[in-house]
Image (cartoon, rainbow, N blue to C red; front, side, top):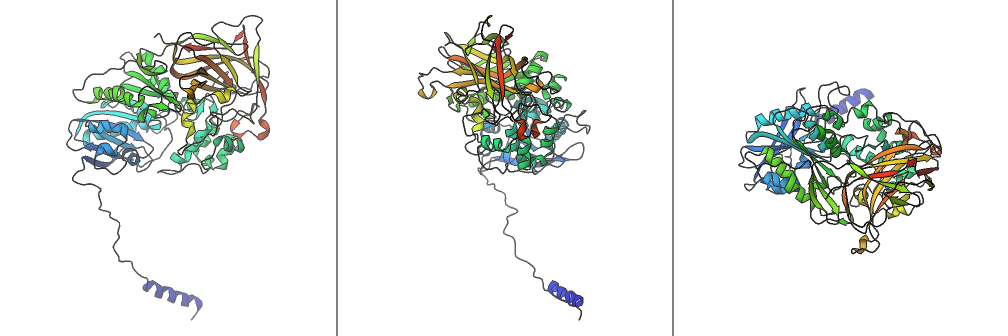
Length: 626
């Protein structure tokens, strides 16, 4: 018998004798974790969109409700995981704590996976653009919302036909997109910390400076259709690890992040070109009628999306003749309104500001527009919580203008008087990319139980003030409280010996050294801080190298603040040229792509801040008329 024939015979014999597993599986496929005590109904639906793609939708409600409003949240983070937690038979115990009052009050709570994520069909595109030049498909989050609302209002018999949308961060972006759907059933929207313009000041860039720390988010939401995993760098100090990696591009390549199309877009679009401006929701919304009543929620210390909600308010408020748009500002980090708002970092507040905002503002806003026969509720244009001495909740018709000017003066003085002839013309510091100024003292941890970046915007700034590469300008002790409320404007006149630079400006409340709370003695509490990349000083859509030694003007708008600087405290302004590792280092040598700067490109440079009569650097503060 030949070898080939023998092999065939043996294979046939083995196949004939192959065992068959006939035992019954122990997996309880028919198991449903419900008892007679379960007080809620759970439904799942695959809702068809106009292109045939079906989106997974989870519908939750208490048993026995009727004529109930729907509160919808669309998400890339997983509808099931976002909605249900624990193992209780009671719906109010299963949903997130911030949602419990809604389901207890008879709302129908709905979560939906956006297309291409988790259990939904279709293609996932991060921040899918509105249909138009950047998206010729005719399919976007506005059309998906329209098709979803059309299905929900027809197929959920317990509904009263009124729908609100809510969500934070990416889900806040989706809530804003929903308002562009034009569906008549959409009666209210609450976008919380929404991504609005990710180049100007939300997740990816701030005024051209790349927020490299958020590279760690990419594999969490883009590596797979479902839940991803963090960058495999370990729970290490990002200051040290990112400094060792060099450029942001090197960090991408080291951990394989350049495989993500979104990461490649960062590199391809470093300036504010048509790609980024075409995504800017504040601009897109301002070009359309305001139809949906909207409560925009912002966190004063939002480390991720501080720009978005105030930017939409600024864009829409002048156009809002029917007073449909309002802004809620609280002393929270990113998504802090959904948690414990009794304090942040080292600072305690007089109340749980998040719980009071949810109870007194957000839910009444939704009730009045969604529930049948509800009590009317129209919040003021701005509702905000003032931190500091004697602070608390207050309302306003608008954010006050930045009209009170304080000048950066020789000798490190911050003064209401402008500089005089003969004053020292400038202050200098040596900015060395090899020793960048940190966002916090150390270490800078991302994720895990010690997520220090979440409180970085309220952290004590003394660590920076003591460095020789940080300029400080301080006012005398105040003889009365000053309520800073709104967005401060900085007019900075500066020069560099390099051909590129960054400038960071911080507005700070300096506590007295002797303080009733000893832990806060001498504390330097940030009110607002921002960065600007100098190559974009002549236009955000193009980069231009600096001419060494030339004095250039910079205008830097700080994020929204609401803080009362107490009597006896001092106001400080800090100026520096790095803010690491949150933002990538500027090599201070002009290169076409900072993402790919070589080690030799990173060079120390002397930065000069001017304060003579012709170049009077100053900060203009918005002061509330209390």
